[in-house]
Length: 276
Image (cartoon, rainbow, N blue to C red; front, side):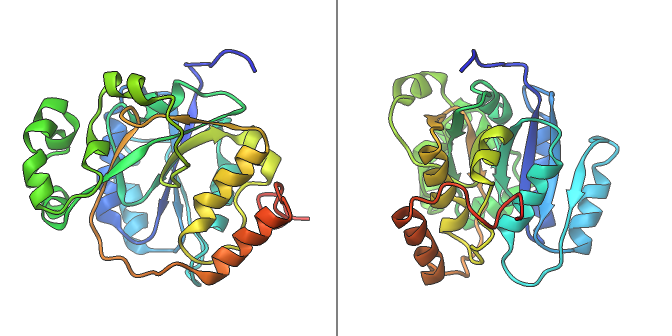
């Protein structure tokens, strides 16, 4: 492998489903990133008028923004993700879920290790209901969380609001340096890798038709089996997950597909980016 190309242009793929308010917060944050050499692809597992309007409202600020949508006939996130990867103009792909707002240094943190053979994964602070509502309504700004001093001062209100993974909301180069060698598994809402490596495994397995394992454990396992090294960018690539009720339970079908993948050592999925 060659040296990392810190100037590599990235494609940021945002996986969304109907939540235009959260998408607006994400796009506003992407407008304020510490680097600017990336494109934005909104990957919608639906055909929602509110998402279309939200994307249109940002076109003056993000002229090259790409919006991909598909018919809403059940959970088909992996299909939407594969379509977005194929549309990406960069070899370096960064993935964000549509309920996770990135820190201003988020893209830069992922670009730091942008090269084939490397995948990066960070973590997210899971906000409580009250602070999420204030963010959504504009009663507090994202800087309430992104400024390290302010964040540390407001940790008690976050805890009282039942936020989870409090430490994951801290942006700290010092903490990143101290923990970067600790092994962590991939988080589907906060990871990056090269398109080249995704092609090696044929992207996301489209047989997963429920939330959970499909875009996390499966892609982590197959990339690792393909020889890709997982880099820990916790405390560097920080996200803030907006509270929402969870409507899904672990899928037995997903678990069966994943177990079969491991048992048969399937690295290149049949139903993925490239169809036979």
